[in-house]
Every structure is written in structure tokens, then in C-alpha cells.
Length: 173
Image 1 (cartoon, rainbow, N blue to C red):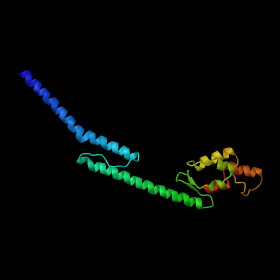
Image 2: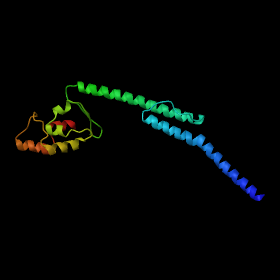
Image 3: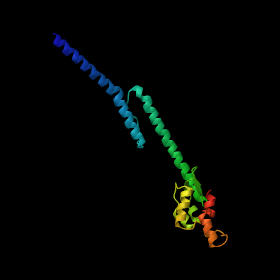
Image 4: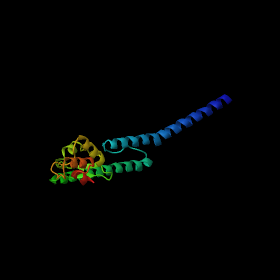
């Protein structure tokens, strides 16, 4: 009789563990996986209705959907704003360049390179700092603009180049 009671006790423990596992699966694991799959789908741009989840999970699902919807809206407004900026910059017949707070070239219109000496045009790279750009341009040759007035003789021009004090580079400062 004691052996039977021990077996019944063990079966009760197993039944309790299985019931706990089932509750965890239904109330936590499946909804959590559904939420993760939903976030992944939204991140890949596959907007759609969210999965069915228990009521306690619905606010989380709703918040995630709202966050992605706001992000899509901001991205669309940003793209439109960038298009407007590029259109405006291209309408300017002169060259236009924008440098970020760290002095790196962030943007330029298509006319900007037309106003640069050849060595500067050849080394024009978005993200490059002024100092890096100057160094790269100097490595290719003179960085003064051929149309800029020169003071003195060739030696004076070479001193100006060595000092990296050409007209176009000074304007970048």
C-alpha cells in the first residue's frame, strides 16, 4: 500500500509539472514568441494585424505596432525632407557643401566639384574630414585653384601649398 501511495505522489508531482508547463506555454512562452515574430515582421516592413495573444499581452503588442507605425511615418517625412533639400541644393548654380560638427563632409551638390582644383575633386569623399581631404589632395599635387591669383614666384606658390593655405581650402575653415 505504501508503494502505491509513493507512486500516486510521484504521479501528482509529474501532473503538476506538466500543468505548470502547459500554463507557461499558453500564457508566457507562446505570446512572447508571437510578439518577437511580430516585431521581426514589422522590422522587415511587413505591416499587418498582430497575432492573437492573451489579453494581458495585447497592450504590449499594440505599443509595438504603434512604435513601428510612428517610425514609418518619421522615415517617410525624413525622406521627403531630404528630397526637398537635395532639390533645393541642386537648383543653386553655385557649389554647396555641408560639413558636420566634426568637420566631415556630409553633403554637396553636383555643382560643388566644378569649383574645385583637380586634386581636390579627385579626393572628394563624403564622410572625409577637412584635414584628411587636404592631405589626400596634397598627395596628388597642388591644391590651389588655377584661376586664383598667385603671389610671387613659383617658390612662393610652393610655400603656400606646403602651408595648405590655398584659397579653396581656407574657405572650408
